[in-house]
Every structure is written in C-alpha cells, then in structure tokens.
Image (cartoon, rainbow, N blue to C red; front, side):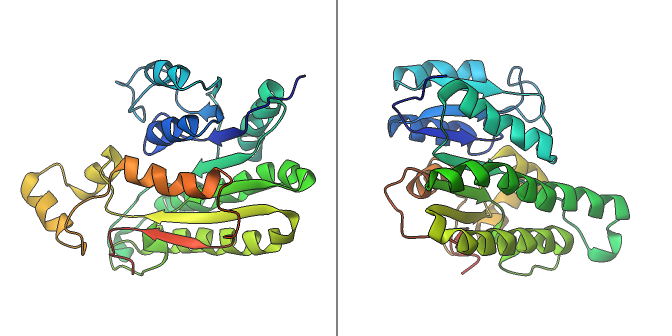
Length: 260
C-alpha cells in the first residue's frame, strides 16, 4: 500500500447537506477525498448530489476520490469501514468531517418513545462511534483535524426542539471534552452547530417550502436569511485543512446570530 503525497479528508453523508460543497472546497485546497454517502441518483431520498454528479468537478480540481456507501454510521462497524477505506486507498487520513443527526421537532409531551430512541441513535450514537473510529490512527500519527456537525439548538434551549436539542447538546459536550482530552496528541476535535440552513432537510422540517412561512423563519435570525452550504463549507474547511491548528474542543455556532 502506497501512501498518498496529498492530504486526505473523509466526509460522511457527502451526497447531501454540506457534503458536495465541502468536497469541492477541500479538493480546491489540495485534498484527496473519501466520500461516504447514498449510492444512486438524486431522485433518491437523502441524495441531493450523487457521487456521479460530483466526480467531474472533483477530478477537474485534481482530487482522487474513494466513495463508500451501504454502511450504517450509527454503528462502530460502519464508522470503522469509512476510516479503513481511507487507509486502504490512500494510506493516510488527515482530516475527517462527520455529518450526524436527524431532526425531530414538536412539543415534548407529543414525543413518543420511538422518536426519543431515533434521535439518541442519530444524534449521540453516531458521534460516539465516529470519534471512536477516527481518533486512534490520528493519535498514533500525532496529527489530524476532526469536525462533527451537530446543531445550534444544542447551545440554546428551544421549546419545540426539546429532545432534538438535548441530544445535540450532549453531542456538543462529548466533542468538546474529547477535543480537550486529545489536544496534546496533536489532534483537533471541534463541533459546528447549525440552524436556519438552506437545505432540503431543514426546509421540510420547518415548512419553509411555503414562501410566507419561509419569510417568518428567516425573520427569526438577526441576518434575516438562511445560510448557504457554500458558506458552511468554507467555515468547516478552516477547521479541517490544517492551516488553523490552535482551536480544539470548541463548539462553533453557525446560525446567522440566532444562537449567540
């Protein structure tokens, strides 16, 4: 197995949310990529930009790309599979971005036990298993950058996001503690928590596909708009590309000022 001369970044859930924008941003910064996502075309649930749609642009930016699909990131085995894919293809892993979670909102007394189990699995188990899989090789190498996407609701209690926000707060606490624990190992671990983002998951969950409803939602942010995936990708890249090595164990709110 040869070791790539270029740095390597892993991005999970890369066929949706910030994945496509972040893949292009990291490729433009000289990274080869391991992309986890849902195999198939953009008509499938959870696929906003398929691997096939992304690859030409990434190739033009000079990035070699390994894709992984069909693994469950709420398990240690699934997370280990995406980490192993990086070493099998490139012989190294410098940066990893884990997109985690599932949005379930509503009044607390309307929440059902099965919904509680769902958010715990998506918002906590995914983070635990991701960190358990990616940290050992980075600690051994004495370097690495990890970003876990959580939610701004984990930093600000909100009446209709009780179980969602609570599990996100737990994830933020875990990421911050782990980041401090491994600071002296040369590994950075940070969380980025978002809200009011312009992507299908938020639009559907909030009802912002209705123009009037969207306007009311946007008015809740000091910036009076939703955030873009390109903006989010640029923020994440600063924590992933190795140019900023003096921040770890942090939770960064990215919500247009809502979570300030």
